[in-house]
Length: 258
Image 1 (tube, rainbow, N blue to C red):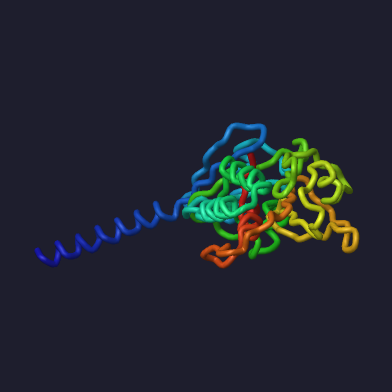
Image 2: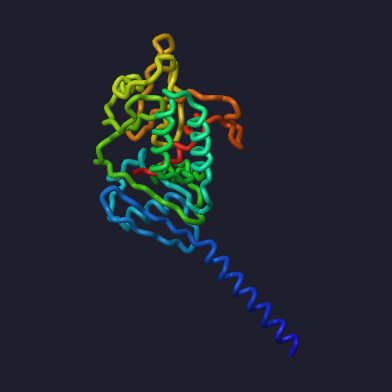
């Protein structure tokens, strides 16, 4: 009797463990498209990126040609994302230390970041024609994700923020450099020799803009131009030993579409 009971308990534990594993291994992807209602897709087994994308486009009855892959984004919501809180804390510290004329610009940056949403971005191409050719660009997805598919016909824009008089969203134009967009948004200081550009694929680059070091760089639609803020460096290090501008740039790579 004891042996039967022991065997029964072992089998029950195995079944419960397997059930728990199956539940834990489920992947749910919330899919948003600029012209359609959001949907949630649950996968019993962790899909690779290309499989998840093809399933999402099929659910929305979309052709792969309908998608702007450069501006489409995938975010991992499985774990808490603490970078926004750390960045806002650093911005508020700078605002408290800033000279009078700079305080409004720190306040504007803080307000903007409170309004925007951020999550851990999966830094991989999303076009199945690219991901299926390289397993390193085609990871398995386990957990909770948000997928944003941008319609190819959507109006292209760029964002300019930071130490400028008129931070705003602007229409994107081909063959325009960061300098062209800054002429519209008016930098507060003329002493900047470079700005940071977060391209839509999540890569951040420092581009020279001064007359003595200028080099033309293409800015893709969906990019963010960040003009670094003047820092009070006393005690301005985060738990990761990054200053406020570095935190801002890193956080912008994880920005969710509006």
